[in-house]
Length: 269
Image (cartoon, rainbow, N blue to C red; front, top):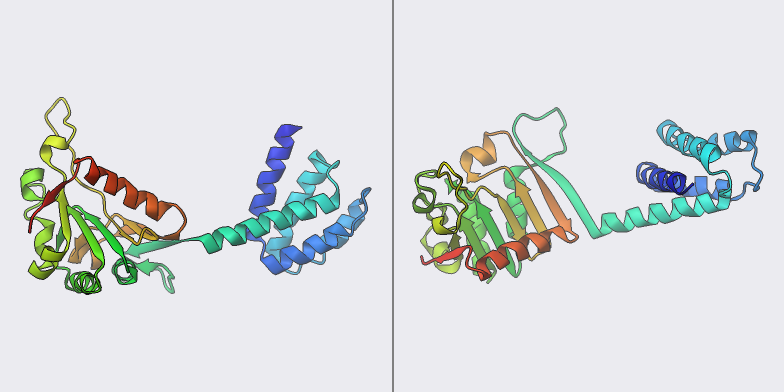
């Protein structure tokens, strides 16, 4: 029986996620009016009030499971479980939003955000702090301009990048060079020193391959894209833009802890 309850709760959560809120609320009102000893015909009548075919199919599947596995749960109790799941879902959406971000060939009428646009949005939204982490950076005039504008409004910028010295040639020049001298003077620059990196039995060591931007510990862009013209405009790149929730702050705190424990070392412009 506990397993059945768990399965029903999962189905309730999924149903509340995919059924539009107005349809879900009207369905719950109808469900709440059903008697305890509900008949198959009465359930069918309630389902016929659902105007959208996909929503009706999802609700039919939920009610079939309920009738088969947990009929001792009363209709009004199921209605309130659906309402609670729907309200939780709405609150979660207000608390956090996640968008896919893409560079590469697009489908017609694609709604995916472009990589450069998402990165610029993060930078331009920053009012207090901005974390930028990249493996490589070069030929990024728009991004550089947005970063300089952030510096001019007194945003604290931490810029972490790979360098030729620490990578032993994995990148040809330090990403800091792409920032320009005025921005390098304002930003706090960091590298991952070679002596702080793990080395395998063959002598290979890790690379600073992460790419992300975090504004005010509220908005995070995590991507496969470096800060390069090719990555922002030509390559196939995929990432996520996360607003709100716990993830942006966790990312920022993690890199702040790496700086605080000297895993990442400062570079003086």
